[in-house]
Length: 538
Image (cartoon, rainbow, N blue to C red; front, side):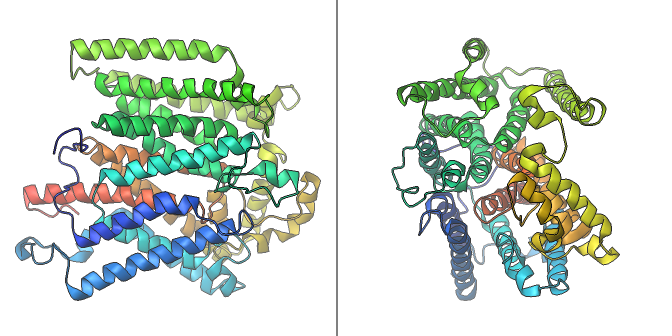
């Protein structure tokens, strides 16, 4: 097949070995990437439950279909393996597999011994993140990692669907409601905070953090020009939606991803030129959003100060010009010297600058939170001065969460109070939330603190191990299989924004899918190397 119809992947996922089980997995991915984000039944009233039950149902269908294939032995790949080359199943388990198994085991123990096992199993007092959902996550993870086979249409469909999601968010920001989602709402606060077919604006940012890194990466690595155009369009709309979603969590996650991609692509002129082209297009799309705002009389739900800088400031024109010039230079250089690479020192220098910026930011937070608590630093106060009111009173919830953890028994420190039962232990601090306009909360608005409280040290450690293992495998495979970096940056983006966001069945299932895709690529690479060396490397 020509480059115009397929993304070539050297030593990557073999599209020829497309089993029946792989087809079912890809149909599942197609449903989750296109139908799942758009699905709702009663506008915003039941949107979390709509997504929750959709995910459970399509996962159950996937299990039944793959189970039927296994029982009837109708897979096209059956009987084709050399028994002499078979490896015992337990030797095929990776670090990430063990981590996921440990996480489910900890969640099970935590559920059984919680104050209300039924609540912990279903996540009734929280956001449906109970043991049941965790088990379904594990099922999806193990099925995808074993049977995924890369096909372009799956990710082009993701990009196409995301354009619709982003467009709805942009229109909703300017009070244009094509689906009538706000028609029955009278609460202005709800109208302001909810958007598209995703729900709360923080969850919209979470969705953008999962999908946009994938489309940006594929706009660089895909050899199919038509596919790249779709990915560029999706990324441009994603950038505009990030501005209108009005949540800093998205800025945090995608800012990290752009730094990672710049480091990763910095050695190859061919890929670096496409990365700068993608960045230029996205910055320019911000100005298109500004033009749209002008025609709408600047009547919108409001855009935060930092996003306003990226949309309304004239300084951004200088940034667009600079990126356009760099893009032109790189395109010219690549035309004169194809396949030119920069020295290893280039990504090392860029990476060092990125790390130095992180250290400087952390020091700034420490300085303005501990040493200098009086100086007026304007809108930067929302970022740099940590106290109870920091991050829309996330500071209050985080500080009290550590109070709660400190008062836990040894068992609770290790296994937590039960999956998604944060509200039960945080109830003594509900009164303090009234000072910030809330009467209760069912999560810490930080996934890692939330897992620490609800599943303990063991639960948090195994969860972090899942993320670490998936990223390690994907990054190790990315030099030979470039799609791995597209999956890895999605995981990185979500993991970073999760510091100030929450797990739920609206976007977290997509995160688990990309963790599984990272591991699937790594397993495929290991299988390829095993076939070449005929030695087990698990």
